[in-house]
Image: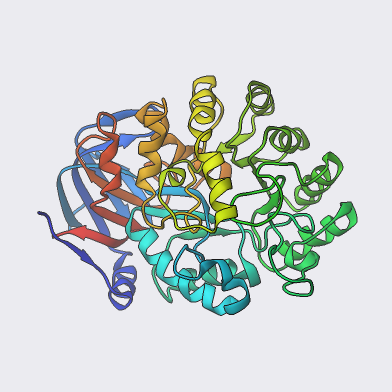
Amino acid sequence: MMRFTFLTAAVLGCVTAAAADVVVLRAEAWLDVEAGRRVTPGVVVVEGERIAALNPASLPQGARVIELPGMTLLPGFIDAHTHLGSDLGPGWESRSVRWSDIDHALLGVRHARATLESGFTTVRDVGSSGFYDVALMHAIERGDFPGPRIVPAGHGIGATGGHCDATGYAPGVLEGGPEQGVADGPAEIVKAVRYQIKHGAKVIKICATAGVMSYEGPVGSQQYSAEELRAVVAEARLHGIPVAAHAHGPEGIIAASEAGVDSIEHGSLLTDEAIRVLKKNGTWLVPTLYQWFEEYDLPPAIHEKNEFIKARVGDSMRRAFAAGVRVALGTDAGAGPHAQGGREFTAYVEHGMSPADALRAGTVNAAALLRTDDRGRLKAGLLADIVAVAGDPLTDIGVVEDVRFVMKGGAVVRQPQ
């Protein structure tokens, strides 16, 4: 069995400092994700934090060469739906009243590192209390500890008693307002959006419908009116910020798409009409698919909702994929397992998507959704966020579940030994 080395934060700092040197990655092939083709050989020249050339006629003199025999190079993966500071560890359902935001941030440090080592070099964190996602973003940018590039949302925004509110507690416990993302009516919503952006949000997350991991009403029921949804989108657009809408049920999906949100998160209960509207408006779908097939120890009320979605989500995704809805990969890590995002690619293929389309969902498509055009492809001038897998993912998508090499911004994070 091949052994791997995981670099400590101190060593990573040294590697980052040395990244100004020229590095050559020499593999069996590299993947052109846009064209969906595997190119041989796979030689990528990295200068500093960016890609300098692919398959050049000659190698730069004095370059450090990293040999990756039998492997395929791909752009670093992008997860458009995570919660780095959350998981389903013991007592998770009461953490809201036992933990501080600092506790969640510290948990996020561990999950950030594991996520990066699994091959995901960029994530979008869609909803966190106390702006710990913004703090994680800044700490990783400073080099305090290893982790992916983060696009933070701050607090998710939703109606009083809805999925983005803290439900299941006695009156007076964890009551929130617009600053914490609990907002009713256009005026409060505008304040909530502005407050998240003021404190570092790069995307606005809203809860258009009820959810699963909460104690509010029927799963998928619409929780924001069309007027309220339009208010979110209008205010976010003034700031040049995209909007991601948590939505399970078709009424909320349709209303959010018609209001102009950039993406529907989950989209678990799609109808033909909802699919038609998503295609008409060009709204991205972030399926978070594989998590539904995990086994969880959930409170009875939440377990019932989880089983309801689990029985229906597969059919929804098959129909959405077949219809050609635009898809960007998201895992919902935090509500499901962390650092297992490769399984999301596999789940898409198992539900009818081609391997090439699945790989695009987690690279170039996700980069387009996140508005980060400096990544998501292997191309000269883009960030040297690069992963390597053994074999050909176009013929065996399962190889992406076992990433063997990770580079972020020209710095080696994980490599074979």
